[in-house]
Length: 72
Ligand code: 9UX
Image (cartoon, rainbow, N blue to C red):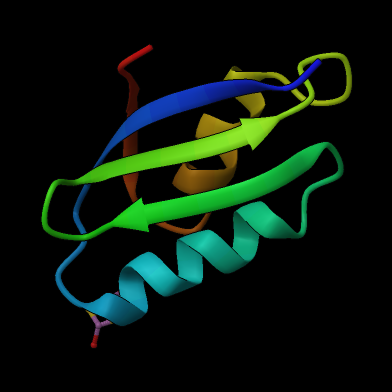
């Protein structure tokens, strides 16, 4: 069963920022879809929690150079 991880992402200034985060998330095993919205500073990642946790997804966002905090 897939669940949605919703994050607040701070530090993005252009669509290449959000695009690079989406690309990083989509490479991760267990991630089904990833959408990062620059305007709202939100990320929605559909994932299989048995394969990858929301905490791991937050780490991946931070590894690309942005701040992530959990919304839900
Ligand atoms: Mo845009 Mo973001 O020129 O890391 S890519 S600021």
